Image 1 (cartoon, rainbow over the protein chains, first blue to last red):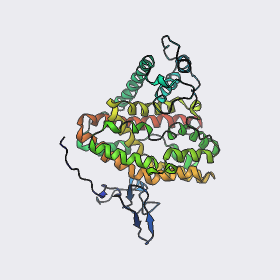
Image 2 (cartoon, chains in turn cyan, red):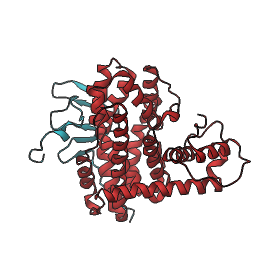
Image 3 (cartoon, chains in turn orange, yellow):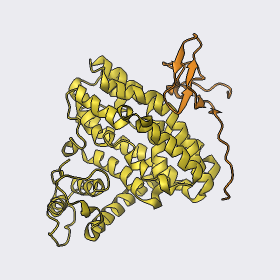
Image 4 (cartoon, one colour):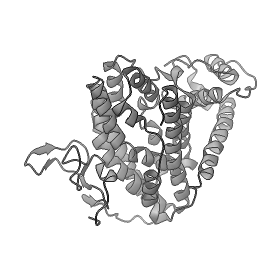
Length: 69
Length: 318
């Protein structure tokens, strides 16, 4: 393999899953509350069913899949 | 930690030999699965934190390495035969590894200890489970750390991102194994590394041995990363159930905090592990695709066997 540059996006949308966000310091949720980010990558809920919004808690895996988002 | 209690002729021979390096002689064949499992666990531990009453040079003693190789070959053969018996040993396309992992995990129908803890377990059962889990959680992520130098660029960077988070993002107070130790102390259990190894069920030792086997062998790097992925992919939801069960039993506090941390952390880690680690490893080294799935299957299989025994002990149908 050559010594090439790799894609390393800051935002990744996981098929049927959360949004992975790299290098953020804070996130504002839908209610306007600002949450401090403490890890290098966070998973933000996209199914709106998480018990700890704005973060993903894996709940999307147990709900029926809609059209791919 | 001190050397564990022997469980048969081989572990008796091994513990004596580790305590007194001058001893020689052939290792006897193990007389039970329990004997075999504690012997291999002990030999692997020499490469982790070791034992205060064992000779540190024993890790690379040629005679003991021969015993370790025989035990590892027997374990690997057993794990691989379970995989082929389950009929899941088809090789995925190199580009299809994350989806194949997802499918494997989605189809896992092993019994769930977290379900039992959430709804029905009594306090003694939960404490027993925590003692068993402490064998791994007090060295959480350590087996995967051995794999870092053995990976190509993308998988290495992703594994380090995951491990950095497991090790507290630089904050010793957030190191996952330390969070678990604090949790143990808060529920009245012993927090020292290896405190409950003598209580570990054979199935629990086998589960730990499988993870260490994969982590310690470069040849098995694909299996190690598949194992990690399956572990992370089956962690968020059960961790949430553990929090609910601990709260129900009045055990909220540091132990619930440990599981609470895993709800969010592993919702991230599962994607790093499946896509950025296993997915890119399979793209860069397509011959690893099969072992990635083997490692993932093994993670689910040994957990199911452990859960079955625990639930049987408690008289609960899984």
